Image (cartoon, rainbow, N blue to C red; front, side, top):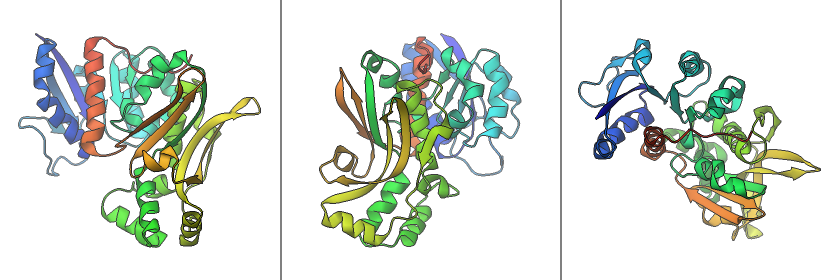
Length: 320
């Protein structure tokens, strides 16, 4: 039995659920001949009540990182996690993250580590619905042509409430009250969260260095009830769609509200969930749909990445 020491950065809903799922899957680690030891959990406020296993070290100091073989980053944000992870990655150790903003906007700092297989990030797009794994492996045998996706649950919720007759302001306020929206909500409704995720996907299908700055972004703030009603009258629904396709020989990435037929896969398979349509010359049209947010949904992908690491599989390697 070998011991693998891990550290957790952040102890919000996702961080706490990662710890719970590691406990719940202890028998799987045992079958692999591994004992998981948590060196520490980094938090901002050590006095805040948390649902973590008894005996877990909860601290506002990151000194435990030097003890870890693997770090699981659940903090969110960009600069602070990068500050903590940069020296750790340079030492050749593995990182598991769901941080799409960090991946999208600071790729220059992360790319060499991803190419070396030390960066695991299945949960960064569509949480526990696996899309990065297939795109980084078996789908590479097919010539990619196009993808369309609905990647933000808050926008899905707000537009759904508007279809039920609520104003945009009321629907957004309700999403915030339920804890669906990011803080600030502009990350969601402005299309930036979706653009981060589209950037990550583009690096597995179009260009391994695809820049976040190349995504054209329009959010749902200007969608009105009149727009919703007009679309309904035409047998359509409005969705915030991430799209990647060839345009005059180069890749064009956009995030914008689109009117789609009610029979479109993003309106059926993705009615209230995240969904992606991936198109390739050889593989044809593939549809992925499922939960794209939530603590345990996200934790399932992150612990899955941990299992891949323990089995010796490399992290998610972009096109190169």
